[in-house]
Length: 459
Image (cartoon, rainbow, N blue to C red; front, side, top):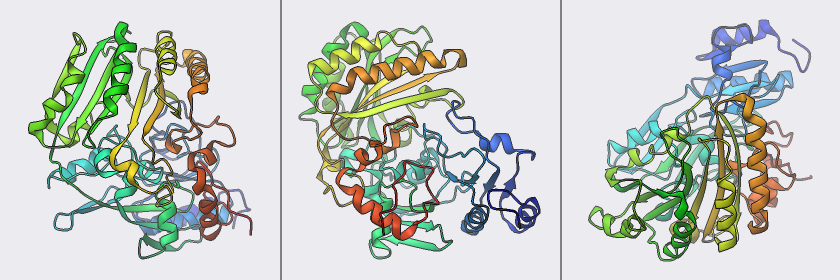
């Protein structure tokens, strides 16, 4: 047996012979590919990567990590901007090969393994004319997005991803395999609905599904000179937007690589198709659009329409917070700062909370964000490592300029590694103390700490 904090290679080779998946050491073929995640700003080297194919592989990987005493990270889709999926010198439990999906058309449910992406999930459910809330970028992992809450195009109609969760299969720090649902391990189920990866390795998720097979939406963009007026119009428009209509205002650059700034609206109407055009028409008549691609489309297509702006292998640095109000002063700051943006790939998004997501009690799940309002996101993206300092500095300066307008709450999935110590507590607000109690029950030693960490409550 190797000393604590080291890897016994003979133990690894023995375990690998019994595993359905692969155990990769730094010298093994495939190691560099396996440690690479969506954000190229993250460059970490685990001591061991356990590429799992099933729950038994995960149980063995957790046991091996406990033996070594090394830090544990868990990778699902690998999309999290903070790069918590990878540990320097630790054990990386990689679920990205676990992509099984089963749709029960009669019960309108689907179960997906922890390595599934939303593109894969949506493709399977769409065969049956069904969907659930699942982000706005299809390459995002089902596991990470859901464990942090799960914003998405359908949240006004059906709530967050966690509001549609039926059950989760979890491998705990002690190696137990538990099913958490409203009827089993209900305290754990509550915590998993927004509490992140703090409580174990979530190996599969069961969701409720809903129509639609088709939605009405797309993108419309206007010259940046009208950005202030467009955002102010949206502020008023949002006050009476129906549950079925999700609109995300964007400050972006033209996709032709020219760097031309634009103001745009990403739109998804999930109600009756014959009403879609009339519901979104006001957003199409703000002037002369430079681009308008709007119409009926399959739900999976709407979930892919922003993917091109977030390609794998580029550098990412994000900052986000809820705003108290989308007032004139906040809009002015956004527009003025975006005009100085150094990267033609970077965008600012405003995510609208309304409808079903706001009609869930604050204490019903770990996610406390249940009030109508707006989340502000700077998604800085660039390709040249030589410009990293410039892009990070612009993002931080822009975020600081917006701080006077922020509410005291954060969305945990957008937190980066350089946040203040109170950022996680701000993300959970009144639910943090209960999360700490659940953490003490299921992970008292904080084995699963490479996440937006909830500390176990004191005994």
